Image 1: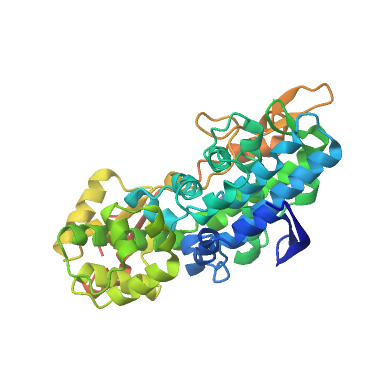
Image 2: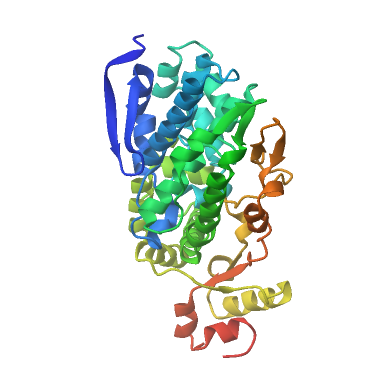
Length: 428
Ligand code: NI
């Protein structure tokens, strides 16, 4: 196989200005049907219901992660770091490009319901009967498995893993900048070029040299802001909850052999838990949205109502559930049921701790490897030990509070006017 393209390919990109492709292999991977599918999966799921600009796709982001990885590698090569092995270049580029290949439509709403864990599916698409696997296997028969193991984080060389997935990785550096750009928020920006200059490989992972600490503080600050202002936005979460309840209801109806007016085979397989690689590749957001549009008039009252809500952005209202104990929640659920509003689909408490996005916390058990600062004496310190800013940022977990979501309009229709007061137990 020819390794270098005769002519470099360039993608115009709003975040990195240009994305450069010099390798035949990368070009061929981009042109596979599995990678092209990512054009039809939004990067931020239901965030477009909150920030109308957030329509950017996983395709968009995946190219960006590839470009950041490419820049990290060229910085390593220019600096001639001994710990960087040039032979790993293509492996890291492929893992960066393909790391999100297995995202399901609106994956934050569906992953737990239907076992569509995106990392597992990325690996399944890379090693299964796919165009991607055939192209990767031209490098060597075990190359698809190697790429998958970097994405699954079990590759023996953890430096490669940490370039794609760590606290300061190509994935996060792209999505913070990209999501800030497309949502139109003013925070979320940091100096990527500067960070690329101050990171280096050290004992099997990426560390930051001491003089670069402030650039990383800025990055962690932007991550903190994005976490609270964008990723955990209550309207976005409300959209996710409505969607999750649609799929849950549909799954239950499916088990009762309900006659759906429209049910494409890949979606049926998702509801049945029998997805295979071929159906997975056919599953995308246009297909799901068309299905929900047609379910608006189906014979099930709950399903049709939830689909109308999602389609027309009539989402659930959200209030703080901080003062609601489980006894009050149970009472509320019973009241909802007695009003003919099934609480199972219309009353939902939601803990922000369950979200896939996390702000930085230094060295917490089960978290990704923390960020280390390397000083002139070659000693390492976890960043919150040496930075006041990071220390206070990582201690700010107390803001997290559970929220309660419910359709205020249905309660109002039943004469409950002061819904918030009624919810908190003060009558109404
Ligand atoms: Ni990603």
